[in-house]
Image 1 (tube, rainbow, N blue to C red):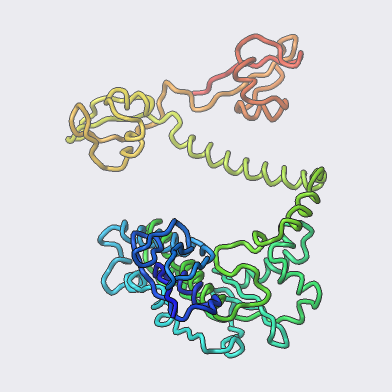
Image 2 (cartoon, helix red, strand yellow):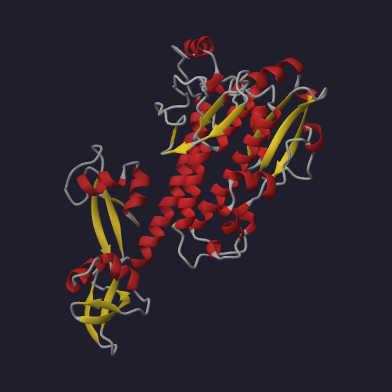
Length: 426
């Protein structure tokens, strides 16, 4: 009887149990310092044993993906760093219960999955695919199927349909074995259904006011459950249309070197041009977005433009009045952002003068509310008066920054036709 001692991990156990070792009848697991060791005989890093003992046979095991391990570590780390009063860390919280479960408990206890069931028995078409879960494309003869996972199964179905029809190699060869089957027999030969609808943790806590850290943890837990259950289905049913044998692997990574070379050569010398019509659409969207953001910025600046800053003591006695937040910040020896945060907030600001209130006054009389621009021709005859620098810029097709920096009140002729001068209006 031959015995193999290997590190005990869930992924390794699956790999070993699914392999064919004709000369091995017993496999034992022996953990030590994160490496795989035979009894009393250390071996090198990796997943193969090295020993001269007659009881051991040299075995090489494929190194599994680290996606599940990394995701588990990240989830537990994020959960540990949550504040103690977080709703997710309560003793009766479902997240606390989920974090305490092992991978095996998630499969067999939380989702009640059993490897004895046939895939036809668990294949179903739910009322809605707008949920996270394990989806499946099942052929009519029940012999071929493709298994995958997604946080939104309907969107993933649409993505597969788009990839099959797309001309780009990176898309129509993303899952080559599955896509080639569809191109040969058609999508009508396959039924799209669900094997398991997993927990949507963000939906479970939809009524709570969650912090960004709590939201990120809930999303990651949903993905963790998806990958765990997908790995169970891949190991149990070994779908013929899947190439990757474990989760976290892009199907295209498994392509042969010959196929990779063909894909690379097909892109050599290809220059992708954007048509004029598409450029017009892109420019129109960009300009519309810029105008919207610019208007919001101008409105935000306009609220505080020319507004005086009044500093008062605890008895509402005015200490000093300034024409800007920066000058008030310099006087109090604090950052201007503190002035902005405490402005008209009713909160006390601790300064070198003691506790003070920051209040906004009326528009400062010594600061112009708006600037009007006088436009003259080359003979210095007045053409018109524009309400603002931006209006003059749009009217005469000259950038506002160019007018302000190079021509405004500088007695320089712009485009050999115009002079620009300011006219303040209090």
